[in-house]
Amino acid sequence: MSGGETTIDTTKASVARVYDALLGGKDNYEVDRVVYRSVLESDPQAPATAVAIREWLVRVVRWLAGPAGMDQFLDCGSGLPTQENTHEAAQRLNPEARVVYVDNDPVVGAHGRALLEENPFTHFVEADLADPDALLGHPDVTRNLDLDRPYVLMQCNTLHHLMDDEDPHGIMRRYIDALPSGSYVALCHFWDPQDEDPESSTFAKDMEQRLTGSSMGSGRFRTRDEIAAYLEGLEPVEPGLVRLHEWWPDGPRLTPLTSMDRVLLSGVARKP
Image 1 (cartoon, rainbow, N blue to C red):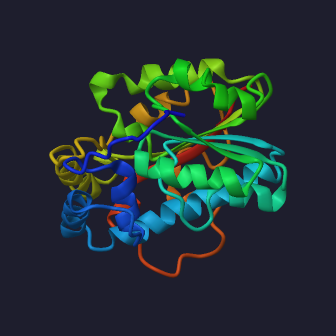
Image 2 (image 1 turned 135 degrees about the horizontal axis):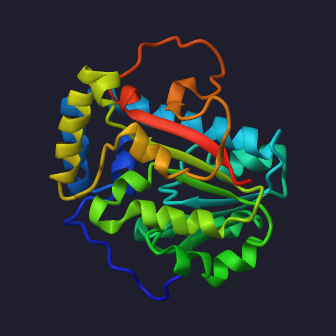
């Protein structure tokens, strides 16, 4: 964790703070709300998708901490705390499940440090997920997780904020190579459905331009094959790489899918 005061750049939108705005939070600035309003111009129902992402995460963690028997979670790019965080979902099933959150946003850091005080099995590390070697070697990670035995790597809405020139596939490969056998990866990513759903593909391309052209400067909608490549060499958990609402839903849908719902793929996979 970095020492001293960290300056918050309020001239550039933050991924974590834009998501906070979508979830109705207050920990954001006008620069973040500019991106938020642009997203709403394209899909006025986008906040519902932000909620759907959180609901997906809870279903995934519930399965991993329950039937899969996992008790260690490394949540990369965790964002600002909201209702039903990874540690709450996991520790409801296993009170001693260990969770380490990672983010490089100083606003997230302020909230993350508060988590340190209230839960002995929950910790926050201020680090950059784009540097796996430094992150996995961080003393606050190695002190609180045993990386020699299976753990869950959470990459929920993170990799699409790495642009192509940052080599997200190479970064993810380093994470997967470091995972012990029996570990799991949970992934959610912006998707360009192309031939599968041309109308949604047009929407994805428009949204990508809005996000990458904003002060946030990131938000790549990749193809199914590109997203599947992140999990190469792993064993997919049924139902595989699917839209959020198709991954072990708690019941039938009661509301129509939003445009954003149609351009997100999610999945869980196990390292043999």
